[in-house]
Image 1 (cartoon, one colour):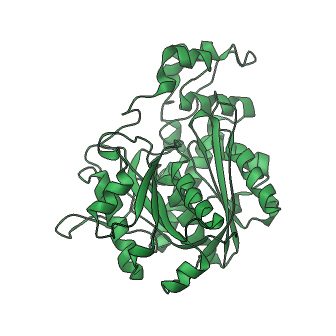
Image 2 (cartoon, helix red, strand yellow; image 1 turned 180 degrees about the vertical axis):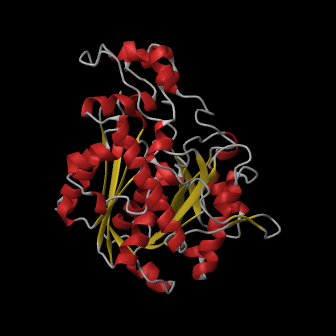
Image 3 (cartoon, rainbow, N blue to C red; image 1 turned 45 degrees about the horizontal axis):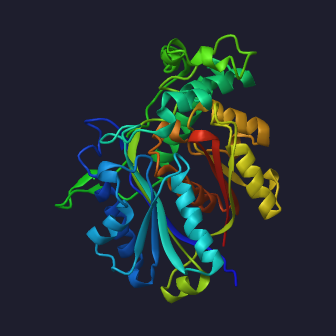
Length: 400
């Protein structure tokens, strides 16, 4: 017997700059997670004996983020021992895939309530901290693997997007994020991070910054070095029409490196009623798909179309879209392919302005989407992300 999977709440930490000296640098990843577990329990007077599972994603599941941080955080918290935990890794798609995994268990009837989310401390564990199979030289050669940033530049070249195009989008993201922050649109979801003495460490997203086209134009491309390393020449075997990749992505039009965590509470109807919870939205459909792995950033459109097909919907049925802003060209391509206008996508800015804590981002943007649907009194939303290796993921939600 199938059940609906409802979202009862979605919370997150602020996003701190992902470097030594950033607002969350002194906070261990497990404390980012535990802070959210305790807030979710307190906010809803949650009987955690009824919460069966916690799936937590990380982009670097090693060292202080490794060895099943989900279950370790549960044991470290005041939650009941009955809740089990699992760690998930699907690159940048992990946070949303964690939500989808718990949702599918609920829909199948195998579980009635669970939590899902992710965590990433990029200041303490940088990208690549755990090594990677794809980093092996022979594997990279055989699979035409290149830097993800150079893949974004390649995609922009193939699609005809200029440096001015991607900078203009970046300005757009920063302005929207600053406006949303100033108006308090993120306040419902953000849980301030506190230390062991209860002192607030960080209560706002600290990556948002004022900028303009003139300032962005002064920034040097971030991924030109990979052309010099030979990635550009290597690409000619697969894309002979590209004489040389023109590098146009910079720190100003790419996602920010930040720390953060996210948590979503899901359950079926009966589980919510038993705990006195009011459902905020229903998971309509979810999908993952693979796409061209060298560019590796083209998955959101086919994943979204797959989710739409499963729901028997079209893009015109979606009120708002949230697409993780890994790079500006990712959003520009998606808008073109899916025919999504500016006023329906990333309406409160995105990762270019606020940053992309790899494992946490998917669940963060799901919560951002839900908050905005409620604020505007709209009904349906679609959240989607690209991920390493050519992965795309998408989830459609509907308010109830």
